Image 1 (cartoon, rainbow, N blue to C red):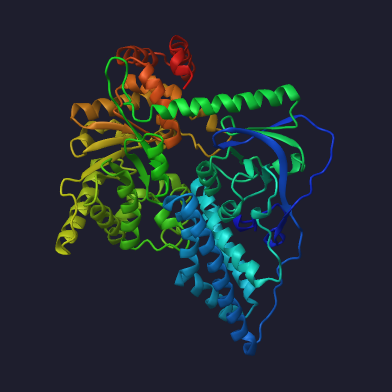
Image 2 (image 1 turned 135 degrees about the vertical axis):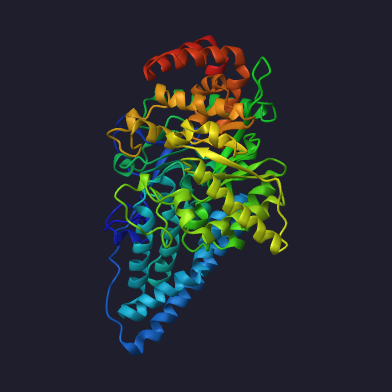
Length: 612
């Protein structure tokens, strides 16, 4: 059973736990080719490829332990925990100095896992039950723990498995008689090519030695992507076979904007990449220079641009891109990160970090959305034939009211320190919203009883991501402080398209007339009741969607922080009246293709917006 624990280097599951080495540069005839992957960290860079490749050391042994040898095995385990903790502590100190507190939290989470008594206890329990060598027990247990997250179709959850891989690899390296190699050993400036790179490895590399990252594994939400962005390193991930297609010493150009990697480009093509890198840097400087400018159309229509975040460390980066608040703080990481207890105090501290980072800017926290394609070990272990239509989000929370109120109390307490808004996901009708609001009132009463301060006027809003919610938006608006449209699910449910199924995902087009009509109904219903209409789905961060959404009347766009400057540029080049005309034409167009053609025409008439 292949699980993410072994993504460190390509090869068989157990061989992957052996250390890796740097391959020697080899001489080969240049072969021009272009590889396509995921644009995970923006920028363009070129240089010589340096492979971080498998060393092919033996498998982890598995053997029986006699009772008299058990204390020695447990002593080995304790020594491995101490060694791993010392290594992670050093990395955490470096991250604090070079990246700041927010990015250092990635490594702090690893230390929390090492210190977690349940994690340690499970290893000891399995050892005592099976009487097998402790390094095998660690390996076997981490496989199972990894699989709980690795089977999810949610890329965020899959990538969180890297935390388990990182910690388990450190423990096994301490237990096994092997010598580990670090990226700190790099002596040249290179394009780093690897099957997978663990977060701690990136933190160990020498500053300035890596110009770009090319990786078989990974996604936009992986810790590798987050750290690459923090270091300002262009990265293309999810290439699957890059380590087979690229040899050490090849000339490689990494385009972290287009998600492309050019291997051994011709001199003229390489010159174009280098020129594009210079233009991109000037463009970034230009966009960031407008960080403090309002998101306002030429004829005075003002909208808010907020950021979507997964983990607290992303809040600082959102501010750097000019976010006016957090429009969607996904709280699931607190319940899905191995070794992290979702107790009220831990939740409160996590929410408070974001609130304090954002200052007076609003922070919208979505209550936990587990179930469906989000596997939650220990909380949501029920198999369902159709989980996306099953026991998830508020449906799960209503079945576990004390669990739900624990989160609500933590959010309420954080609201005493800043502008916090609560958002309920997967609401399908008025009765569900009323039930959520009743539980919120109970949580408020419990805070009052404990004399825990909170914002008595805290806003509670509804996430519109189910067609039934959009069609009854006029009723929901009477009981909501705001709406936030989750287009990812709304498109999926409206068009009967599983966006994770590559055979039909092409049908999930946000400009489909059915989707656009639901958006229009929702926004009009919000305005009819005097509340704001926001959008936190991916459609809000699409540059080419901005004039259409302005025309539909959207009040707040929430997106990945890096997209904010580009969307702002389009808004500032547009006119609200012109956008309304565009929206009316698109609503009457009748097909996604016709809608896209009208958007093409609009951008041709607004060349300043096209450069965003």
